[in-house]
Structure formats: structure tokens, C-alpha cells
Length: 152
Image 1: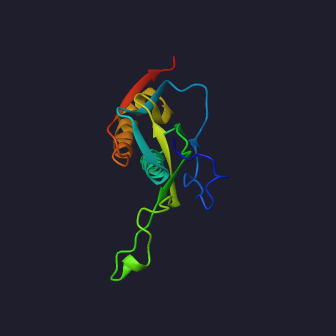
Image 2: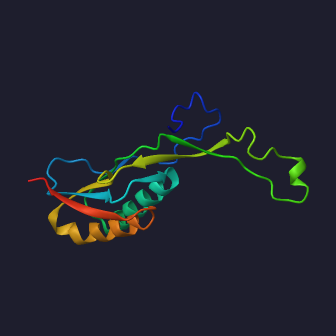
Image 3: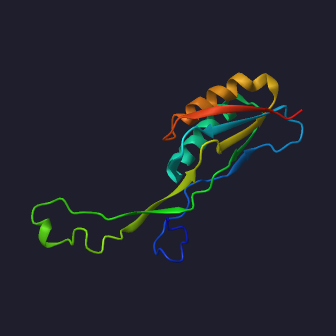
């Protein structure tokens, strides 16, 4: 079971995701596209932010009307037992004794079929959004697929 409560892990970092929603929220979009995981995977918060920035930048530069949502939240606190790799390090560190580790980052555990990003768009912008989702998927650690959901 991973550590998820920040009260118990002193020094846990803050979430690096700047915005969980961007664009214009409207009711009259035609399509909803989802970037869906095809594997059970743990995604670091930095990778989620890189994917969001990539998708957002490609679409906003084209002047397309859209609404982008990040659907996962990084709850899991990642720890690392940092080892010293210099000469004489064997006298300074404990090895695996008390190897709990210090918090170094956050991650979201994503199941198969769970959406990571979701974008609402109009039909005429479909090819542009698919292209932006492909670049966003390249920033994530597992293969992703794009699901299309008609809203009308």
C-alpha cells in the first residue's frame, strides 16, 4: 500500500500540475476526446503536467475553441533512499538498514481504461486535437489510446 497522506510523510512535495482545467467551458461542444491508458501504470506529476502543457500549447496556438481537463490526481508519495556513490561512502551510510527514504515526488496510479486527459471540441477540429493528443501521449510512460465520445 503506498503512502498517500501528506500528514505522515514530512516534506512531501506539492503537486506540479498548474491547472486542472483550461479553455472555455461550454455546453455546445460536439465531441469529447479522452486520452486513455492501455496499461496499469504509475504516472509522475511532472509527466502529467508535461502532457497537459503539450496538448494545451498545440491547441491554443491554433486558436481553436476547446475545454481541456486533467482527470487524474497524483496522490501517491514517492520516496527514495538516496545512496552516496563516492569513495569512503561505506562509512557514511547505512545501506538497507532504516531505508524508508525521503519524499521526492508524487504520482497517480492509473488503471487500464482510465482517462488521463479529456478534451471537449467541435467536429471540425478533430484532426488537430488528435494530433495534439498524440504529442501529449508521447510525454506519458505507457501507451495511450484516443477515445471519441459524441456529445450530441
